[in-house]
Every structure is written in C-alpha cells, then in structure tokens.
Image (tube, rainbow, N blue to C red):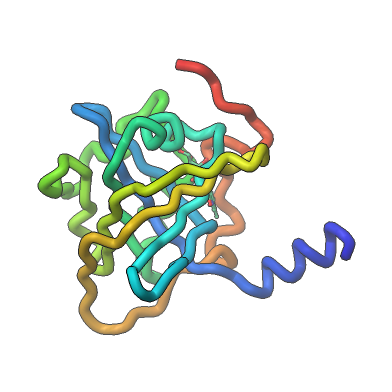
Length: 169
Ligand SMILES: Cc1cc2nc3c(=O)[nH]c(=O)nc-3n(C[C@H](O)[C@H](O)[C@H](O)COP(=O)(O)O)c2cc1C
C-alpha cells in the first residue's frame, strides 16, 4: 500500500478530535489529539497517542491522571487554542473556565462530554508518537453530539509538527 493510499484511508476514516489535559503539581498541559480510541470493553480502557514533540507529552510522561474532552462541531475555537499553541510558551488555559478534578487535572467546563483516565502504561515503539494506555475512572456526557472531526480542522497548523523530536527541558 502506498503512503498516498494510507493517507487517503485515514482521511476517509476522519476521526473525531479530543483535547487531552493533564497536570503534574502546578504544571498544566493539554493538546488537541486525533489519535485516540477505546481499547477494551471490560474493563473499560482508552488509548491516546501523544507526539514526542509536544509539551503535553513531556508533562504526560510524569503524570498519572488525564482528562479527555470530546469536542463538538461548535468547539473549533477550543481546537485552535489547544492544537496550534504550545504550552512551552503559552498558558492555554488562561481565560478559560477550568475545574480541577480530585487529582488536580484541569477539566474544561465548556466541554460536556468528558472522560477521566488513570495511566497504566506508555508504549514507545520508536515512532514519533507514544501510546498512553489507561483505565477509565469516570465519564460524563449528556445527549449524543456531532463530533468535531479532523476534516473540520485541516486548516490548523499544529503548535509542533510530528517530525520535531522531543526537546529536553
Ligand atoms: C487536527 C490535529 C490533530 C492532532 N493530533 C494530534 C495527536 O493525535 N497527538 C498529538 O500529540 N498531537 C496532535 N496534534 C498536535 C498538537 O495538538 C499540537 O502540536 C499542539 O500545539 C501541541 O501543544 P503542546 O506543545 O502544548 O502539547 C494535532 C493537531 C491538529 C491540528
């Protein structure tokens, strides 16, 4: 299969977008993520893939708890903020309504569809992303919703491109 075929396949699959947040002490982090999926039914498990270039990856390596916010079609401005800025030089949470969960993880109050995760393991297979596998500790959602998808965000320029390698702090 050619790279073009793979790219077209993934574009047709058009995954929904989430914002993953986490914290270690007072250090908060979060980024827009298209690589994520439920990975077990019983027990409930979820996987998220983080780019090694991202600030969120570097904080996430030290973190145990995470929050997944499912974006709706009305959340493009949240996608822009978390997908185009970097926590290295910006406080992405400034000016947003944020609650802290019992573990200090920032939860975006604007996002009604949210899952809390506890990390189990991180898999680094040598590629540009690592897989974070986690147990689902809680979830909240109201009505079903129309997700914001990768096809709605193709104009966004990521704060870090995946071919950047992790910069040591
Ligand atoms: C449509 C789209 C999808 C993205 N998917 C991912 C992803 O699956 N995993 C990831 O780590 N970064 C992904 N990114 C990139 C980060 O969201 C982006 O580089 C962000 O600015 C990193 O912020 P940080 O340095 O504060 O972590 C995506 C960006 C866009 C625009």
